[in-house]
Image 1: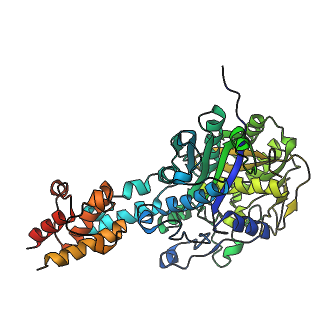
Image 2: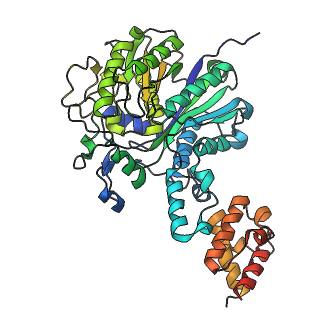
Image 3: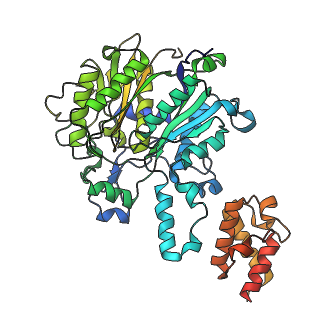
Length: 420
Length: 81
């Protein structure tokens, strides 16, 4: 006998972002239309064409990441731990002897675009300057892409699996997809899922700059990220980590958990068009959204809100407007929260999916700031510069993430099962 | 020429940095793994940092035999003098 497919709900949230050191401050800043972008005041930034970034608002504390742990973890793992511990506590779970979750029924899925970049480059610098014998023996477990997921798994005692999606800027939406599959299949009762990225370092910034991908609005950092505005000139690199506790409805209900909403479906596609340019037809993006709708047994007209990928690049934003029109229609209130957070790469999907969950819970869409002169003919309803209310009753929304290499991943959430 | 006490104090500083053990708890009879919270990678880091601090070589095949703080201090002392 096959077991019935499980409904999956969201029962915990955690975040450390350019807008705040936790979920509450991040969400408040998103609704207030604040920018997390600032000028990079370090010496190494002086030579770069883009000298702005969205750095963390709050640095991890010694209490969150004790000193000995911190020297064995790259920043990408440290901040994943900060976000995950907040989400874990928010879900009502404890640690160690107070952990109520059976480790064999707990998995972790945390994506990253790049991984432990600072440790990789920092130890290579040490090797060049001081020789092999000075390289940290912790280098490999710090730089490997699955380090963030593994560190969180170790802390929470996850034994059902520890997974790391690596699909550039779609990584953490892919992680949410992995979590949904794991929970529906019955392999676990609880999955801690999310994303982490920490690569504000001269080398990746040079690489993105050489692609002409980054905004060069150095004199006006807070106005640099401006999805769909005619004066947009690239994305702003951001850093941060966001985690969501996902749980079968059965498990959540049995323990009387607070429920933020339902992860109703995930749709995947690949452009198979170009390594870094989106297919201008938007076909792959629209496929991902349609597959998410089919997965959730909904249609485009059911979607009231889209948190778009919208990175503030000239080509990407226009393409996405077209694919949203094609797959969803024109009724959804669309927003681009990267206007405030910058682009967290592998953590972007988790951050924006979290914002989508909170938008449905609070029935309000955060603004797209800096949208002074919208590109003509987009044909979508953008929450330009101010919040927009959502209606009463059942709500469904999509968070889009697209990445270099062509992955498109749409996460569909609803307000079904939300706690009163 | 460094004395045994000076070398012990230097190793204790390293163990404190790597494992967050108070320097006064790092004594000659203590085992790195069993008493001082070092795992295999932390042990490697203690060895490499000791080489750096005292300007000596501790080859990997000899490092394997350094179980206690006293073993390490004796090796460093021999290598320095």
